Structures are given as structure tokens and as C-alpha cells.
Amino acid sequence: MKLSKYILMTSALLMGTAAFAEDFGDFGGFDDEASGNSGSAIEVSGTVSTDIRAYVDVDDSDKIEVEAKPAGNLSLSYNGNNSDLTLSLCMDEDKIKNNPEDIIDELVLRGRLGDYFTVEAGKMKIVWGKGDKLHVLDNFNADDYSNFIIPDYIDRRVSTPMLRAVISLPVANFNVEGVYTPLLPTDRFATTGRWTPAQVTGLTTKLIGVAKEDVAQAFTRYTTATATAGTLNALNADYQAAQTAYNKAMMNAAQSAAGAAWGSMTDEQKEDFIVAHKTTLEDGLRTDGYGYFIDNLQVAAGKYSAACTETGFTADNIADEVKAAGTIYMYMLENANALSADPTVIYPEMWTLKYGQFGGRATWTLGQLDMGISYYNGWYKQPSVNAEKMIPFINKYLAGETITEEDKFLAYDKKQTFGLEASTILWHFNLRGEFAYNLTDDIDGTDPWVHNNSIGWLGGFDIDLPFANANLNVQEIGTYVLKGEECDKNALDVDYGENGYSNNKIAANLTTSFMNDKIAPEVTVMYGIENKDLVVMPKLSYKADQNLTLAASGMIINCGDDHSEFKAWEKNSFACISAKYQF
Image (cartoon, rainbow, N blue to C red):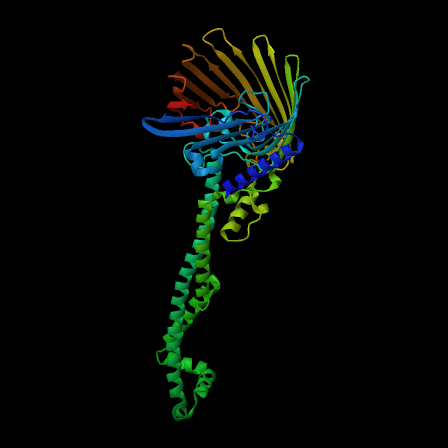
């Protein structure tokens, strides 16, 4: 269903762009011969790769887990006189099983309408900001973290149906672009396995706990009703037996007391006689040694009456309670299994124009300074958890009641981002920077279930070093949540931070190459300042020929404390060998 929706949306955008282009200029198309132009042929390229990872348990070096990750990419492009078409396919096990719509990694139709205007549509990825694979302004596409941060930045991005228009003027490299996407791609995380985030594990555990408690309560009601039925039926049977014995004893005593007149009485007259002479008859039974019939009845009646008062049921209606409790238990159990099998029901319905995104960006050059401003109107890509709604939602879902969007305890928060960016060259340094102000619906920071306003920044440089074709790239990226003192009032606040309300990371990448680029050592290091997370990723590549590259790489993760951002993945250090064939 999701795949067909993506295809329909992408097709609609593509057709809309074609119609728009045809109305406003020579779109070019594919029939270049008919127009007297010689268009480019279709170009095909791609890669086939395999990564083989060995995860080593730092606490048990003999415990090694090996996994293979084959993948393939195929790209096709056509360049006409006034139009381009590109198609990129990406295939790996995760996409085929979980997100088949992303086998189409990108499908973009681009039309050039005159000298200054370009329009694009399709399933796309775009990048905003001057950062190098790190950004605080790049908001339209989400990230796929199911394989952590190991894939390259652009490969982690999730493409989405999108419409983009660009005006390029020859003055100061001035560019203005507008972007609209009708859908909200959201960040993806592993839900099972070693790369599952602690937040996902914690939420799943909490959901299972609430569901188990509800089902357990329903089961307890059923077992209690069953046990109560057994008790009431047994006490009622004792009571009925005592009543029968008592009635028989009273009947015999009444017959003796009435004498010859007994035989001429009707059954109704006999009952009236017993009622009228009850005290005398019972005194006679006690005198004759048969008082235990009276005592047994009183004891049995007392026990049965007390049990009915305590449980609120009688032997006549307890069967209805057993049936009702059993039905509810089985229904809740079935719904709990359904929730476990399809946890996506807890998420909001994303296939709606409500979650559209739009924005604009302008960039220009003044001397050696490239600058830009941008505006984004959309949503956070990770959901906020409303803890107050969680238990009521689970209760309603398991009970089979109608669930509305308002009932759901996960929500994607609205946000607007106002951005500045710049890059320049200073001596041998390529400098870059980004700044973002994120405006949300919780300006005062008093709603614990909605993100506070925040700011984000990025600053860094790269420089070519005078040896071994070396290049050093260093960037610092950070965020700061405003009104953090309000978050401290509730540990369940979506912005609550164990280590404070700033989050800064330093990332450094050093690349070199030897033997005409045949051997290329590389190392990437990332350190979280507040959370004290350290990630080191060394890599050594060998280009066997112009198509085949072999590599040995790895990752080492070390965390400062139990509140570290990467704590859930601390034992996921690995060594990897890989091969990639490009054509």
C-alpha cells in the first residue's frame, strides 16, 4: 500500500512538472531528432558491493558475530537539450523487506525553462546548508539510522516526492529556490537487533508492560470469576442439600403434629401448617435430637449469603460473568498480539496533506564569501511521546474501542526553521558555517509533550595538508534547547536531558592516498562533548583497478556514562572487509 502511494504521488508530481514545462517553454522531451537537436544518450552506472562485519563482544572476545551486507545501486540518466531525467535504484536486504518503496532511491525529472528558471519534480533528495555531510539546516529529507551512522550522509537520507523550482541569476551567483513536498518522511530506526536505539527499546518495553498488565487484569477477572463460580456453586449445593434435609425433617414433624388431619390436607395447606407452627416444630426437632437439620441449614445459608455479598454474584448469575470475563480476556489477548505484530498503529496517520513541508532558500556570492538564508516550514522527523496518553490509548486499543488520531500518544511536532549559512576561503582553510533557529508551538516551554524552541549551529573547516595528498576536515555541530528549566520540572518532558540541554559533537576526518590513489587510508573520529561518546572509524582502501575497490574498516564505540547518547550501541564495535565494483 505504501509503495503504491509513493508511486502515485511521484507520478503526479512528474506529470504536473511536464505539463508546466510544456506550457511555458520548449521542454525538450526525448524526441530530440524530431526537433533537429542531438540529445545525449542514456547513461548507465552503478555499484555492487558487499560488507562482511565481525562484531566482537568486548566482554567476551571469544564471542564473535559475523554478518554480510550485500547491496547494489543502479543509476540511469538522460540529458536532453532542455530536460533531464535521472533514475537511481538502491537494493539491499532492509529495503526489500521493510521499505520496498525506497528501492527507487531517486526519480527526478528536471526541466530548464529559459535561461534562469529550472523546475524539478519526483522522488528526490536535496541538501541545504554549507556543512560537509553535517547540517542543521537540511530538513526536508529524513534519515535512515537502521544501520547507525555508518553509511555516507546522502545514502542515509530518505527520498520523498518533491517539487522544486530554482531561479538562477548571473549576478553574484544569486539563486532562489522553493521546495514543496506533500509528504513527511520520518527518521527510521532499527526495531530489532543490535542497532535498536535505547528510546525504541524503552518505548517497546513500556508498551508491552502496559499491554501485559491489561491482559493480566482481564485474565485475573476471568480466573477470579471461574474460581468464584466454583465456590458459589459448591456453597449453593450445600445450602440446597441442607434446605432439602430441613424441609424433609419439618414435613415429618408436621405430619406427626397434625395426626389424622394430615392426610386430608392439600400441599398448600401443609406448607401453611408448617409456616404457622414453625417455632413449635423446630422445638420438637431439637427435643427429639434432630436439631442438627436446623443448624446445618443456618450454617449453609450463612456461608452462601456471605459469599454472595462478598463477590457481588449469586450462583444464578455467576455463569454470565464467567462468559463475559472470558470473552474480554480473549479479545484483549488477540488485540495485544495484533499490536505486537503491527506496532505502527501507535503512530499518527502520515498519508495526509497535513504533514506537507515547504520552504525557500536564497544563496549568493560576495567576493570569496558564499552566503545564504533559508526558511523551512514542516515537522520534526522523530515523534514526541505524550506519557499521559499512553495508558489510556493502550486500554482503548485492547478493549477494541474506536481509536482517533487525538487518542494517539505519539506525535510529530510542527516546526519552522530560520537559517543562515556561509562559507569562504581564508588562507588555506575552507571555512563553513550554519545557524538555525527552530520555532515550535511551545514557545514558553511549558508543554512537556511538545518540543521547546531551540537553536542549532555548525562550524568547521577543511585544509589540504602538505603530505600524502592529505586533507583534514574538522566540524563542530551543536544544539541548545531553550527554556530548559521548564523541562527540569518533568522527567518525562520530550526535551528532558540527563546531561543538560546542549548537545555538541566534534567530527574530524583525515584522508590520505599513496601510489597514485591506489592506497587510501582514512580515519573519522566523532566525540560528544556533553555525553562523552567517542566513535572512531578507521578505513584502508585498495583500488585493485579502475572498477574494483577493496577495503578494510571498522568502528570503535566508547561511552562516558550510562546517560551517553550512544550507550545502547557501546558493544557494537566491529571490523569489516568490503568489496565494491563500479561500472
